[in-house]
Length: 270
View 1 (tube, rainbow, N blue to C red):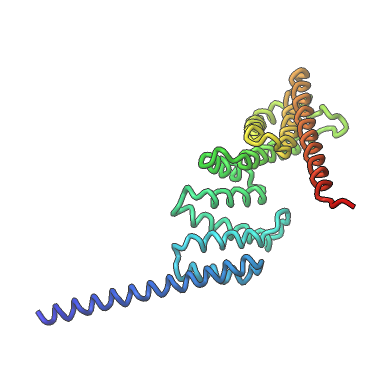
View 2 (cartoon, rainbow, N blue to C red; view 1 turned 90 degrees about the vertical axis):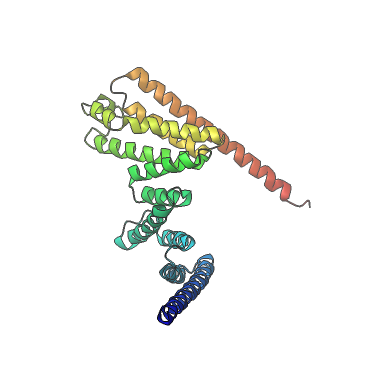
């Protein structure tokens, strides 16, 4: 009986000690998170990375640390620079977002972060799918529809450019007249249509979304190239492209006028 009591006491002591150690680990992880956050806000990203990595080592389930670490890696990444040293930052950020999504599959910030990085890495299909996941979670955000539309345009433009490279560059209708037009249309026309739908929705949610209108212009011009001998359809697409261009220019003009008026109002009288 005494032996059992001693064993029980020993087990309790062990559990208490483990609990204390766990609490100390959590406190230390939070301290590292706070230090990393401060370094991040001061744009001291290398220091921030060290603190966030240590926080995760101390408390692997600390979601905030994973999010901040992903954001820090993303800050270190320079879009448009394809060197291996630069791309590794984006890859590291994607790993952190994936880690969060394993536990929280509906974390929209992680989904958006992944989509943005995939778009910058020119992984357009993955970017589009992630933006669509984000849209399902927040269907009122025009920027998500815009980004998804840009991904669709990127896919279609890449396919179209590859086909145009085979043709006579001096003939602006060469693609539409070419033997490869039907194959191109079959391969990527759905991306053009989806992109138009996404960007149209973006402009419905934000009436003055001139960036979305600019991409609608581009998508309608891509669609015109894929009408494959149908001059009437081509002309209709070009007309729509011009209409979106005009709307975007009108919005920019009104915005500039409003800014000028506001600036004049701020000028003190002489």
